[in-house]
Image 1: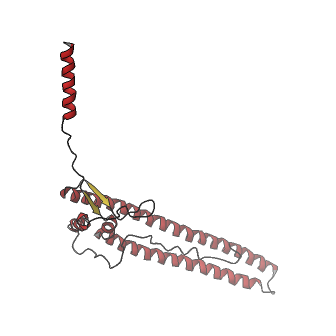
Image 2: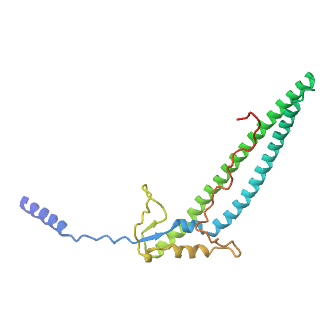
Image 3: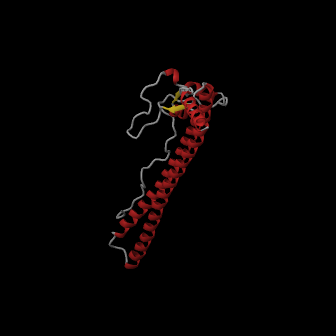
Length: 223
């Protein structure tokens, strides 16, 4: 009985060793340029137009605030000139100095208003850009995945990014593996009639829209 059991176990082990190995299918990889798809998406073009309009309005408001501040500065300078008049009485000088202190406080408040407006505008626009790009990237990724699956691919690589050493993760790829144009055609199927066309530039990605010229409101002796 022991010999029979030993023989059966040996036979089973041999059968297991001689079983054919099932080969895994070779991975099929496709390449896509996500930056191109994002930059040239019709929704990006429309968003850029909105940001440009908001930038213009923000700059107009900034110029208005700076003009108001400069008017205050000019008024302060006039007071200073009046203070140089030797004919002024002590009471007049005290009143003028009090008025100048009030004017300086007004200028300081205007400086803070300019700085706050600029910072809030930049923060708001940056947040809009980040939110927009994230939502659109997710939408594009779905179309990329669907296109890759239709081609039988099981891996899609973005060639537009950079590694930690500043190089593209794709050193070489046959153009037949690139599905960027196919994905772009799928995206444009949902493009509304009359939507803005892609401008003739190298990139149409949204950019921060508020100019950072610094607060222009200054007054004598202010830092």
